[in-house]
Image 1 (cartoon, one colour):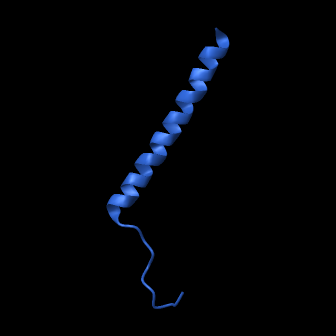
Image 2: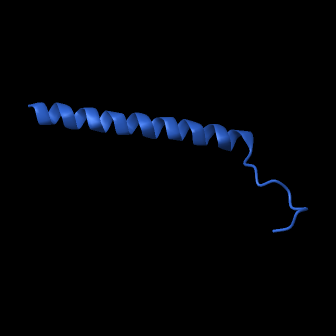
Image 3: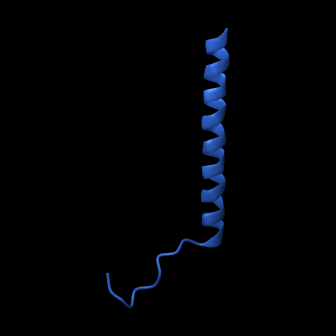
Length: 42
């Protein structure tokens, strides 16, 4: 990789989608934990 190479920065839409996917995965993980607790209590 050379000093003159351009920054390897993803475009704006891609960054937005990545942050949305990250939030969705965190939400999904919390839902799974909650479901396991509910199933375990019964």
